[in-house]
Length: 368
Image 1 (cartoon, rainbow, N blue to C red):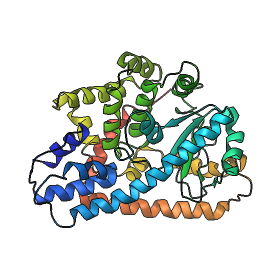
Image 2 (cartoon, helix red, strand yellow; image 1 turned 45 degrees about the vertical axis):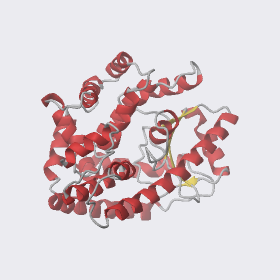
Image 3 (tube, rainbow, N blue to C red; image 1 turned 90 degrees about the vertical axis):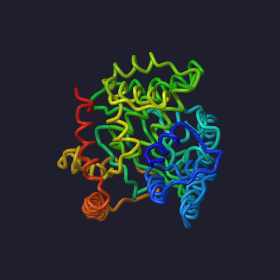
Image 4 (cartoon, helix red, strand yellow; image 1 turned 135 degrees about the horizontal axis):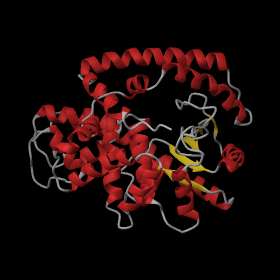
């Protein structure tokens, strides 16, 4: 059985109850895949009944799985604590991605690990949320990798506590330069607080938007699994997904993902979904190079410089930012990361995948 077939089985939650032996190379590919897909826990379960597993494979998976499981447990519990605090203060909020999925889609953290907390709030509550989190042990994360835009408040200065739990605050999902109002944000907050319904459709579209246009498909495997799980929820309405995505200019990209999900349910990948499958499920490319290739370097420099004013505007009490040191450190870090990414892609054979991703996504960029 091939590595590609195994990954498809993992997406469909299949497991082997009998002893099956794979080629040793396949096991190594699975270990490599788990590093970029956050799927080591699923892979461990999948190969638990397999024979002739090479020595060291289980230990490699265990080492990654234990570390990520601990991180997920701490992060999820912090999320629940923050949820209680925000509810007590009657602050509208909605968790995104990992926390939301573990609360409403997955039955266990073992199934879906969490790296950090993504929290959507209303812009009017921003200062109150910062003050509240500061009181509860969260400080400005000056080492945050998030690019902060001065004219867009969907990405804000990150927060971190003594347990190394990181929070990314958002006041909107879609970029302000394209949309005066963010329909996805409105639906998520409205769904939770006004009609007592989790808006699975808005979260479904957000996952596609974030994976494709923000992360350049580099976390494709876990996102496709998330989409597959959401699409199986009884309250999920496909027609609403299409209606919402059309209003925010994402319908073609959403349709591509829906076709891929439908094909997975039929356990076959016809030609019309094979390209997206290759770029998400089986992609070996690298996010750093994707961002550099897909974005204008001059605009990226402007975004980096704008970090200073935004950090000052939303600065948490007691935190100071040495901007010159921060700028130089970020600049040299990006240069080193770029060179390393090129070397990694050449060695791993992922350069062609990277170029394919860029070409595929250019047609789906949101334009005015």
